[in-house]
Length: 164
Image (cartoon, rainbow, N blue to C red; front, side):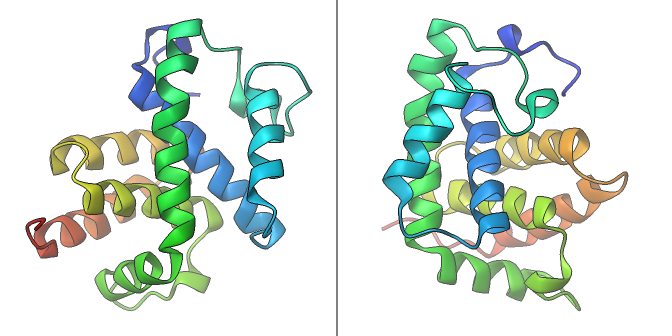
């Protein structure tokens, strides 16, 4: 878990974490076509209605504000990432010198997907998006994952065209 307790993290930070966790689950399971049922199960785990697959990582039940504001943001990130996965993966591959997506850890790959979606949506300043992804990498990734994530998302943010 990140150093900051879940109750003190912003709903958007929680949403990013949840989007990452959902995409990671989907990646591990082979990206099911049954996204709606998978989302229902995921949210029941987050709310504590069913036992999560990784209680240590998902952590405690979020407060009402975190869930009310973080869940819609997470779903936006999830749906955009799934809808444009091929394009997002191509952009990550292009920004990843000497790395293919298949060589990346599933954790890094899915943190990058969340960050890349946010950069595409311009939902926050690039520096905030990258910092949040770095926090996820420090929490869930390997010791040096955050450096890898930082470099790739920085390249993606600098190569992003202005939204029309």
